[in-house]
Image 1 (tube, rainbow, N blue to C red):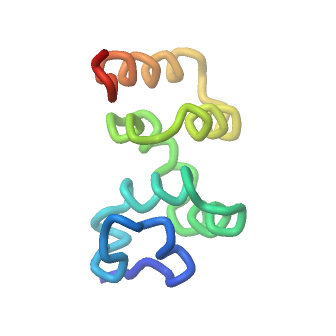
Image 2 (image 1 turned 60 degrees about the vertical axis):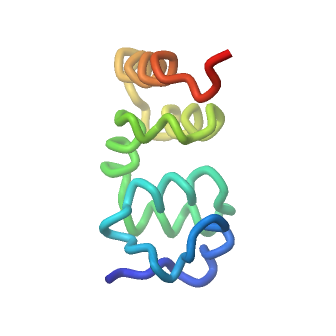
Length: 100
């Protein structure tokens, strides 16, 4: 089991970080670090997971859990095409977090 680095534990306050498998729960770990991590943590996550997995995360339903700010940053960083970005918006609008 690939364990989360100790310096990332503060980003996983609702779970026991030592129980999270970085490979098995890659979208969860990556999303959490991209959303809450400092510059060094994000740099390390990018090195560990790569831009391909970040792109895959953004274009999946898992992106619903990310902040708009995080999504916009990675859309720009990864130079996603407008039609790809539209898919992200569609996923988010069909599944709102708050239904009122």
